[in-house]
Image (cartoon, rainbow over all chains, first blue to last red; front, side, top):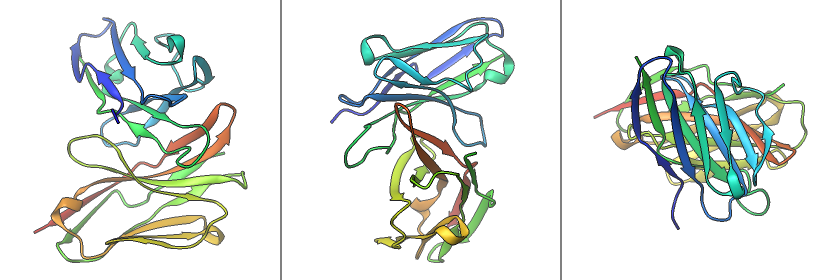
Length: 116
Length: 116
């Protein structure tokens, strides 16, 4: 079974530039999450999708961050314009909604962003 | 409100020692799930265990064991006879059932160093 795919693995940009991250979840997983993990901290939820609808984006800085999940499969997370404090690893995860294993998060390898 | 506290930032042990990682959580829900995830130096978070709020039985899996106590809102993780390969950051997580699936938050993590 293929895992959660993310790209790019690494990205270095200057502040005020834009960046986009892509995620392909495990096939059949209705729920998709984007987490931000700053060095030395635990993952912080940015946005959660159920199929192609947003169910929680309360911690997404909407003035600069946006995310979409077209057709309920792949998702992109965009930052525009980036700030220095956005330097972090952006983790995508997916999970089942119901049944055995529901709620268990499967993570991708993450996209490490450095903002200079 | 949801909250997960991992008071131990870093723990260092010598190989073959036993080590316990503490996790204390807060929730108003009666139905919830608790998880432990491991993040090795490679960076990808890996699921270790899931416990639901109605099952307080302790669990053992090889060298790993988990102690869930609702009375103290704790879900502690013990590694017996630690090995160098256990060196990683360990995260405790709390999931509550929400619209569109589960809402999961993570603790700040405990970094475990196992020295040979």
